[in-house]
Length: 119
Image (tube, rainbow, N blue to C red):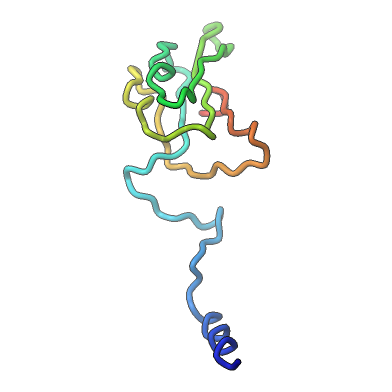
């Protein structure tokens, strides 16, 4: 019975295994693929990202911009594989993968990201 108590007291002095997220963040490798970003100013509405997506996660939706109505990618993060095919095929390189890994939401509908949410 003394052994579990001794182990508990010893563990109090050891370093924690977890980080205090979001204040502390883990360092990520250079090739980490996180949340998608969209530069709405350079998007040319070519539909290449929608066509290449293996999970059909990307759909083109109408967005009102300063230049008029354009079709831009809307992404369902809950189905995204983070395969980076959309990033590779994008001619103006307006769709990129960031290092952001904070996808926590309370409602699944919040995982559907409109183009305005991807900036």
